[in-house]
Image 1 (tube, one colour):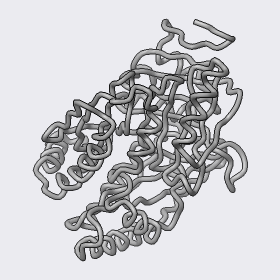
Image 2: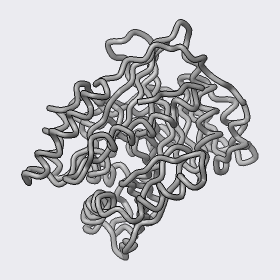
Image 3: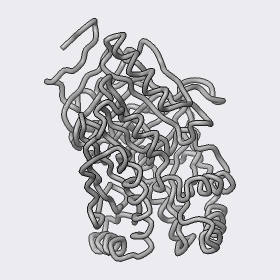
Image 4: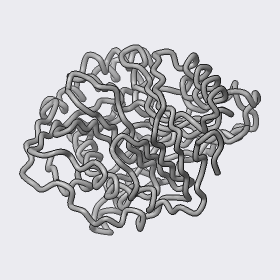
Length: 394
């Protein structure tokens, strides 16, 4: 259907077709609910103030007759701006499924130089430092990440990697979104497949599905089941999860009625990692409240920052030797009514023309063991590495 030259939806297009039509520079967002491909942008909105951005978007979309705005919000809104495109063509399809990623591509050959930041031993030392702070009562939880830097002789095949991510992670939130230029020249794309929904809004209905507590998947069924059982039985992992659910529920409570918080988490599986997850639902008190306003209130949750929020942020600044930028931020879309979906930007990479930065983090609590947290980040890297035909030992 078109209005003012805008393609709002094409109902008979499959998710696989949208994936095939993706070109670098487009916005792609697929999930088990819906798949979107947005292109032909007539402008970009950038802002460090997310509530102000929500108001700007509503006025712009209504004034120009555009269907939605889509893009990325950073981990730290003071450091880099939110960036949302205003597409004139938005095509939607049904849910993603593995067959949509039918291009069986080994995107990148092995032998690619990899630099770990920090090195594995340095990451383990940072975890040990955080544990000492936690045991001293300075923090309840902090999330520490590490980064892999990869360099390639040729252009990174973004579309092929995206297709492989869909094939491996059809139940997650798989995305590709353009980033503003930085020190590295040329185009930048945030590409990934997140298992975690921060918040969605459809009319008055609000959903958040926080994840925290992780264990690696295994090709051996016995080991895989044992890892899942560890997650369910572990007091450490349960505590890590409870801190996140508590924060999300407390934040949503003033904005929602009929807030439903299940008493126990359930297992959520990705291709690389088991998670504990809790699906929280509610009904908005104010039907005019935008999903972006909710996202601004929720972000960053203890799932990607820690708690207390400010003390965790200070610890991350001290212990992580890189800037997160858009890693652990948000990716998604919002329409003129304030409806939309926003996933947490994890299991992702920041891709330049011939370089990539991959990110993975782990939640640290007082009982954390540095070697286990290092192994958890290694497992989380596998989402992107598998999509590129690469492996990493540590």
